[in-house]
Every structure is written in structure tokens, then in C-alpha cells.
Image (tube, rainbow, N blue to C red; front, side, top):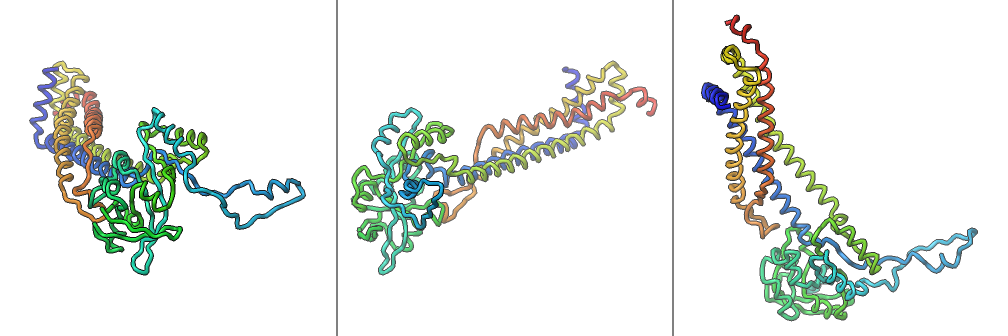
Length: 417
């Protein structure tokens, strides 16, 4: 092996320029593979975060529905009778979660639950002189929202905890605040769906990056919202649940829906289309990156193929002096793997540096105020994939011409010379 390695090194030095070009091809492929996957994964995580950071794994709520068992359908049971009902109203339907305290108690005892957050949502009108701007008032448990849903990351001005510490306070979506010309410290007036008016103090701005969402949203504490709506302390419209294992979401949602006769939806159903888009972007990233590595492998194959044609006499002398076909094959595989390993190590280094450079490029946009530079990912798995795939590609690129070289008849070569 030592002798074969020295022969392979001698052949590499004899074709130094071509070997360097092949190694640069591998380096470029690995560099772009790492940088592309790192950038695309970071971008996907940022886009996912815009939705998933605010989406619970399981949402428990009460949906307003029409009672399917109407009195007339119970009375007219004869097969000779038909009944038609139009404009059925959802009378006596309640929007709050029934038995909310029992549900919260059950969640606290469930070992599969990481945590939960209470929420109370209600439509409201924000008064701007004689104009009413339609929006939503969200009463939240601010400490739990900060802990499990990164609420603090989206509050661009003020402190989230102020809506709990400051009486009758509110955090407005930034576009909504601009419509109302509301500065921090100003008082605004809202009108509930029941016609009651209430004054609240602005203590912060909220900006999620989804403009249409921010134009209508506002946040207060649960206690303030219950007071505005004239409801008791157990009045809730949503319970947002975070799980230790997100894959259990469909199972747990079904259990609580059946147990408490309420509505529950898991994150998989709520964001099915969004997850599909993320998977497609990941597939495209991997496909482009692997294509770059394959192209680099073809470069090695072409260079080794040319080297074999130019070194026919060398191969003939090796075989004539006692080297077997397998020895010749091993020499060229060593050449290929040497080019691959050197190019791969350099590619991993330059890939990391290129990814780091991308992460320092300023990325300023009003839609995403918390993002200052382009998002990237330094997932070690990408480096492992690049290393393994480059070795496989370069091995195959060297094996085919090496196998061809091992079958050369030295007598024919020497006779031709």
C-alpha cells in the first residue's frame, strides 16, 4: 500500500495542474452545497417561525355551530313526510369554552404537555374620530405567550409585561397604530360588539411580519379583556397547548375533543399547506446541491480518463514489472479519493466561511423588524452529508476509469510504442 500510494502521488504531481482543477471542482461543489443548504434552511426556519411561533401544537376552542337536531326532524319521522328548513340560526350557542377550569386542570396533570396559554379573542372597533376601524382584541396570558410563543420577539416597542402591570393597557399592531396615529403613552378608545366603550393606554407596538394580520390585531391582559367584555374570570375562548412531542398533536387533540365535548385542532391540520411548501423548498435545495456534487464528480472522471490515456506506457510498465490489475485499479482509486478528500476538506471550510459571510449581510425590511441579517443554518448534518456524498462521488468517478486501466494489456501497449 505504501508503494502504491507513492506511485499515485507521483502521478498526481505529474498532472499537478489537472489534479488541482479537479480538486477545485470538488471544493466549489461542496462550498455551494453547504452555503445553499445553510441559507435555504435558515430562510425556511424564518418563514416557518412567522407561522409556527404563533401556532399552538393543539388549539382547544368552541366553534359556533347550528344544532343538527332540529325539532321538526324529531317530529316528522314518517317516510311519507319531507321537511325543509331555511335560515337556521345558531341560537343559544356560546363562544366560550365550557368547563375551562377542568380542561386546564387536566392539562396540568398530563405528562405529555409542555405548557399551555389561555386566550380570549373578541372583535372590537377602534375609534378614530367618527370612523370605526374593525379589528380584534386578544386577551393573553403574557408570561406564557413570551415563554412558549416568542411574543417578546414581535413586540418592537415597549415591554410585553406592561399589559399585565399597567392597568387598562394595550399593545397595538404597528400598522393599526399608524392608522390610529397612536403613540406609546396615548389613550385610545375601543367599542365592543355589544356597543360598550372603553379607554386603553398604548404601551407597545406589535409587528409579526404579516401586514394583513398586524393591521387588525391588538393585545391586552386576560383580566383587562374580561373586564371590557363584562365576563367572569373563567371566560376563555381559546386554550393553546404546547407539547413535548409535536407528533402527538393529532392524538391529544382527539382525546380532549372527545373528553370535554369541545373543538380541538392539531398543528398538522392547521398548517398542512404551509408544511407542504417547506418540504418542497427543502427538496429543491438538496436537489441543486447534489447536482453540484455530481457535476464535480464528472470533472474528476474526465481528468482521470485523460490521465489513463496519457499514462498508458506507465500502466504497461507497472503491469510488466509484476503489478496486478487490482494494484493498478487501486492506484487510480487512491488518486481519485485524494482529490476528493482534499477538495472536500477545503469545500467544508469555504462553505462554512461563505455561510458566515451570508449571515453578516444586512437584511432590513419593515415587514420583519426583528431580522437584521440574512438567516442561515449551521446544521452539522449538512457537513456530514457533503463529506459522505463527495467521497462516494469521487470514488465512483475514479473507479470506472481505474477499472478500465486494470484491463489494459501491457504487451499491446509496449508493441505499439
